[in-house]
Image (tube, rainbow, N blue to C red; front, side, top):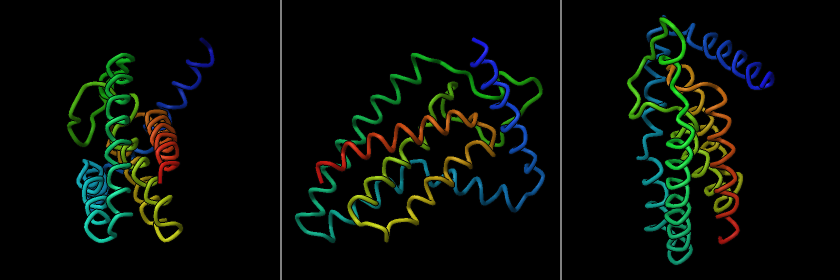
Length: 173
């Protein structure tokens, strides 16, 4: 139990360090935009692009992405609703998040999980030309901590799960 308490203390410290940026309005504007980009639109647009532009390979990629996201969303909801880890504002006194999350639980980060899943699949399909998608996925994860809706370990878990599912699904490509 001591290890869990230690991880939690470091988690809170890193979160509070990240939210020092809340007074920088222009920075927060871009962080909010980056976070919103992880709402699922890009996860639909990129596979749809390949569906219509790459013939049979694009259709195969699209099917793999759909299957992977169906599994990912099921696992995400299962973990989130069974562990029920409260979000930072519910745990840290006087702490306010910069955005209102869609639900009350934080572990794992769904935005991060979905972003890393997509990034892993696009990297497997396109190769190193897709590194900007991986950078975007990391940015989505960081944005969720900066906005105060997730602890850093929520992001690590989401990134790890999304990457693992993406890797497993990429074996079908």
